Image (cartoon, rainbow, N blue to C red; front, side, top):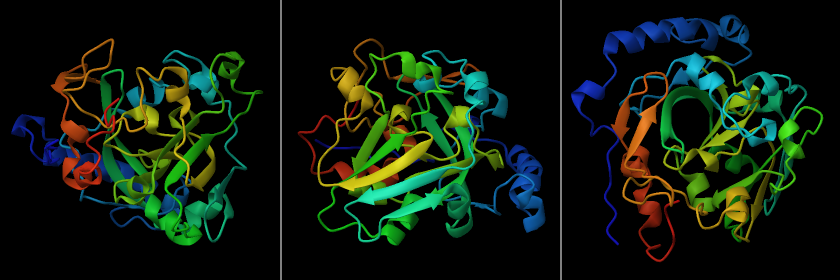
Length: 310
């Protein structure tokens, strides 16, 4: 199977964010994120360490308004509707620990503040494409997942990474829906996890990541559908066994392990050819690998027999 490498900058000029708008917004966000000359004291007002924007991954589309990103959310632990933000805000995010275990030389348990201090923080503006055919563009703050891998040192026999979301019945009313296979788990291959685009997110819009968006820490691979992003993570496990993840268990005919974005492979109940942008409602063409093929297509060149698309 020939896989086209869709370059992230191959977009009409009309879809590119005006330079004046980008830099105007950056100045506002810099006050919270320690950018453009603001010192560490300024950055600490938001709870985030200083984080410079990495411009290697231009999204090619306008940043989605913060209000839309923080009030239109999929997080089934809080309910199976999009208006869970108020319920999610009741979830405490401190103290919070993330255990890294399994097939690694140096298993660790990190406090979230420890990760904020020791990991190389940066900001990346990434697209997010939901399998439901809506999309957004978000300035995330976090660190490349490979930095965490360098600390824990996966064994050569490890083949997959599994991400597990917190289970907090006292603040997560959605857990009462016992037909779901809790806890929420997601996973990817070691090669996918080590890819430069794989990102651990701890902030958005120059602020700490809110719980409705998966705070205090989530995983994001922008070339995959959004359900692949584990939210509010408590465990990261390296294993040699391919996991059967949450939506695979629930609806294997609709959701697969790989779930790479492809406009030509439709969901059984709707087309994936186009997407609706949050904030504007504009309909735009879906791009292969969500526009990140330049960075990830080579991961799949020898997997022609796999179901690579959700």
